[in-house]
Length: 100
Ligand code: SF4
Image (cartoon, rainbow, N blue to C red; front, side, top):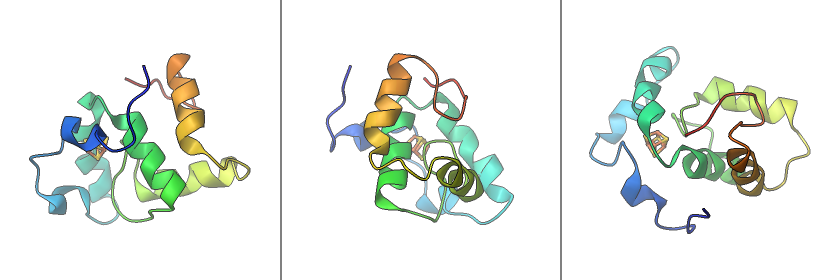
């Protein structure tokens, strides 16, 4: 199923959380991302951060450091949303993690 670009935030597991919870620094991000693991829009969220070059905070269950590492491993990707949606259809993200 393809999600619309704009409506995924209303289904976010963090929609009622304080933004301060996800926009923490360093090792705190590994704890903060726990809310993402049950989120049904992880793919859309992660794609938004990767496609828009958002560097700060937890997005799609990945810390800043993890996203930077992913971008280094896949420098040729121009459309993360398309790639992640294709990977979701196959139930595996390009970095090997299983997704929702
Ligand atoms: S993946 Fe995490 S940061 Fe993104 S919408 Fe879901 S809970 Fe929020």
